[in-house]
Image (tube, rainbow, N blue to C red; front, side, top):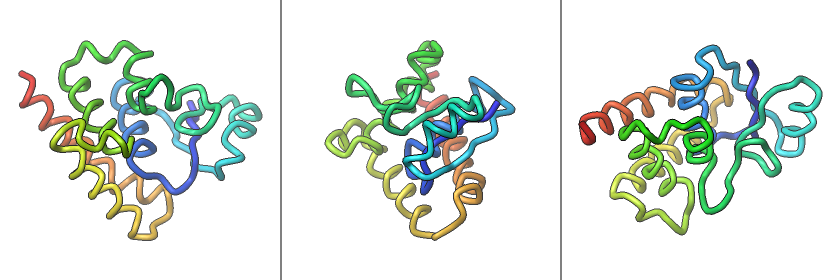
Length: 143
């Protein structure tokens, strides 16, 4: 299935594809388009939209898109995923940067990747292992 979001990914737009491929849709194809093209692209192709204004999965009720996906897919019962969601929230929602001690570090990593001026797909490819490592850390912390 195709999943579509805004171009120039940062924290939530890398964390969400990691979560989608790891727990929701292992064969997911992630498509990055201009902000104003997310909803038209989804309507035209049937792709699932995320982390964009009006998207199926986006910020709402104080949650970041990653948290919305966790909630709607019932993934919060995994304590490691729940811990990751708090870390990602803090890194993605600027007024909640102190949500966890790790959030500022994740934000710094995400900012660093965005400064590399890579193609969006390449950035996704090389940044996803950060979330594998974050999940491994969260598993150790919660078990």
